[in-house]
Image: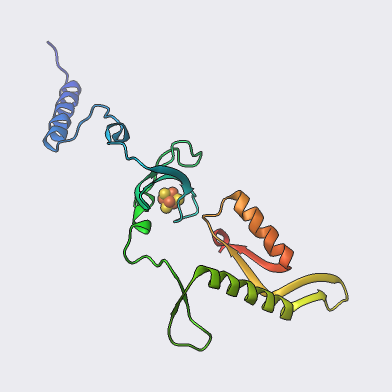
Length: 188
Ligand code: SF4
């Protein structure tokens, strides 16, 4: 058998790499997807969007007995098609975390400490403050006498986790108030 130098080195390299992968415990053959081997988790599944970054990957959250028991990428979501980065894959830690705040914390103007409040109280307080600020800052005409009907005392900032429909509803809400300073996290 005639063996050229190039063929010998190529063969030795392939054999050496295969041995090295074997030594390291790595399998070169196609492996089965982990999800196909995992034990199914039982519970109510809800689809949601990862809250971390502007990519907006879809996730499936499984909850059982009031507790999140599994989070995985949504295979039907057009953005990530089932995958999640390491941060998104760890999002179960947001729900199952003893340090998670579950009540509103409020610090009154001039105060040096936080007080615990209920959501109903907080939402009412936010609405009252919006109305108070809007009433105090609303202008119907600008310096040239043109009708503007706007407030420059309020600003609205959208987040990357909002989807198109939520952004649409949010911007309509802001414009209805007369807000002109309407921005989005992704542009800042
Ligand atoms: S899974 Fe990762 S890439 Fe996708 S939205 Fe969350 S943080 Fe961003």
